[in-house]
Image 1 (cartoon, protein in one colour):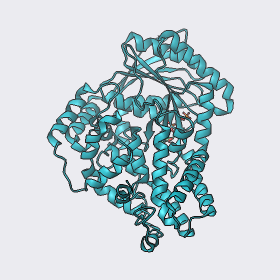
Image 2 (cartoon, helix red, strand yellow):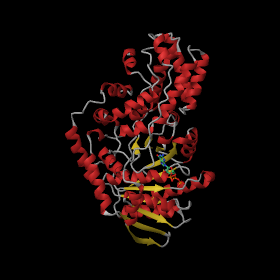
Image 3 (cartoon, rainbow, N blue to C red):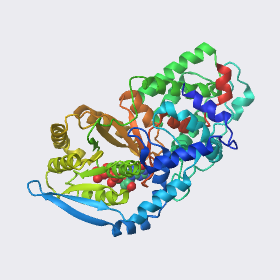
Image 4 (cartoon, rainbow, N blue to C red):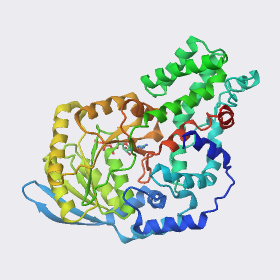
Length: 497
Ligand SMILES: Nc1nc2c(ncn2[C@@H]2O[C@H](COP(=O)(O)OP(=O)(O)OP(=O)(O)O)[C@@H](O)[C@H]2O)c(=O)[nH]1
């Protein structure tokens, strides 16, 4: 199924339609909460549970955390690390379960595996499209021309209008738990809005398609962080298309611009690529998080820990950033929030020793997943990379198939810098996937297109907020839809076929 099908499908299912599979889906959701979610698939009932935690105020989370009992055991003398088991109060657990069960909705079941999403996505239209209709009007480059060949001057006039409707708020955590679609929708609003505005401005400046139109288009695309290569490729392909269809007016090409972007995006991902996490066939799965300071590694680990803990996995964290003051404490807070165990070391101690102890504990105590937080000092690249290599060596020595993933965390708000960082890390370590954080706080979501087009490393998760539930497996269809909906005219798409 092509990416455009998601546009067509959503267009065919108006907001008022109620899915028929309500009862069945709800039951599935509830069952999943009780712990039957498989390693590579995540039902959104889990996400609902996650979001239920999120909806607790920070104050209540903190108070629960402070009520938690921390039992320290097995201090390892030679490595100066200590292991603490964190047990959250039963009240948090029971609240989560109750909320998750109560709020399980037909709209919420989504599988990480993209092939399995179609039914759930279809059924989720009704709940979230009511909200998304507003979004659409906020960013729509109004009245897209039906096709290249049949544009009229009235449609081109309409397409020059620029909307000034404010972008909807990015945070969802205080409201009802958000479905994947809602979270994507809200998280990408800034990018969509900015991109829509830029496209409008471009179309307003040029009534005719000529060379300077293409120059400006390239600049617009680069400004939207889709990456230089992609911008050039896109305008080249568009030039050909425009010649082919003998299009003269700039407004005629709007749909084609978006169509081409989606096509190029699709092609770039056509290699063997999986967004799902690689799990160990047996024994603990070890996932190493790398990335420079402040990109959101610790927060992401906290969110992931919560996600998999909610899915019934036994999760352990390793605080291997022993250098930055406060890093261990920060991860410890997330461990308490997510109700998982953590292995920590003394400040300035050898991070590899923490990793060693954590792997030992993961094996000995039958943990399903070990998430390893690492330091991110970019200014000291050689040392950092040596340190990462040492950690990896230790992990592989203890578990030959590990680490099962090396996830590079990138901050989407840094735009092209994120791409540069990704290239650096990719050169020095085997990055297996990317977590792109802070997409909610940026208009630079186009960076996903650049990463895909230039690095060919799959984006596996995206961060769409600061709360514990604001992490989602990356779904290219949801992403592209969230980015371009309102900018593409579905009826024109069908006519063009
Ligand atoms: N809006 C938003 N903020 C985020 C997201 N992920 C992380 N943050 C924020 O980014 C800031 C830095 O996050 P950290 O998790 O401390 O980053 P880090 O990479 O662990 O940083 P170091 O420990 O210094 O290496 C925090 O204020 C987080 O709340 C996200 O998806 N959206």
